Amino acid sequence: MAKDSRPDETGKPGSERMIGTGGGDEDLERRRLRLEATLAERRPASRDGKDAQNPSSKNSFGNAIKLSSEFVAAIVVGVGIGWVLDYWAGTKPWGLIVFLFLGFAAGVLNVMRSAGMVAEHGSQPPFGKDGSS
Amino acid sequence: MSNDPIHQFQISKLIPIEIGGVDLSFTNSSAFMAAAAIAAGAFLFFGSANRALVPTRLQSMAEMSYEFVANMLRDAAGSHGMRFFPFVFSLFMFVLFGNLFGLFPYFFTITSHIIVTFALAMLVIGTVVIYGFAKHGLRFLKLFVPSGVPGLLVPLVVLIEVISFLSRPVSLSVRLFANMLAGHITLKVFAGFVTSLAAFGAVGVAGAVLPLAMTVALTALEFLVAFLQAYVFAVLTCMYLNDALHPSH
Image (cartoon, rainbow over all chains, first blue to last red; front, top):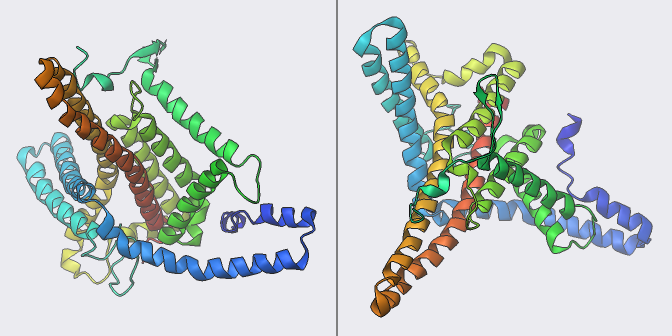
């Protein structure tokens, strides 16, 4: 828990130490507070802006690789599970067939999820989680 | 042959080591992994060494990369996720430096081997699974059971969700590996056109300007890809860690 807050306060210890030794007085302190207020005011706005423009500015090649790798990976994993299951249980073609289709379904789910068309792993659709990058 | 576009990915043993029949040689890949880790460490160490109030360029870069990853993690996983900050930040810096080192001529690109990226992805997923079970116990399995599914469909949905979960390390590693491999091969092929065209005399030299321009443009693109893939890797790590932290929402 103690660790949680540490990375939050970036650079604060450094700046405070400088003020202490430099004897910059209230003027510096006041300016520092004003800077913090301005930064706090500006930070969420800029982050929202970045999020909003991110999908459009991302190059489409990256998007293509992302979506196709999601899709292919699920099928590969499905086939792998099916093959191993066949190997152990001796149900020669059936595990492969069934898990190929399940992998296909999982691949479609992956793609829809990463395209932001299906809610992330937690259902509850109104919960607008901003994880769909 | 020097014009072989695959030649750059070959592993060569620098110091052969064999312990109990297992090949543990120090290869060029290991050398560049060590170099990437040392360079990332040195960058941050010297960047934060003199802690000026008005940062130098190096310090500014170190602070920017720190805040970039910190904000990314906080956005994706909340302030609870900050306990994973050292992990995500080291991963990001390692992948970034590995990608960027690959852009030097004659350097080896560690992230162009799928076993390297797959090991990194397994590290991420292993952390997610172990931390998820340690923190939430069996409630972690609720990750695979979306709420509001009819009882009859639950086994099917769970199977699909499990496959979807298991495909994460694969897609995570394939994405990084495929981008780096494809980019470096394309670069090499276009650069190869320059020399083979130039062999045709004056007309060839004039024509070689085109692939040369393409190579320059591709190099710029590769810089973008190097940053983008490190970013994507880190963002997805954050999202997966978020699942481990909050599996039920």
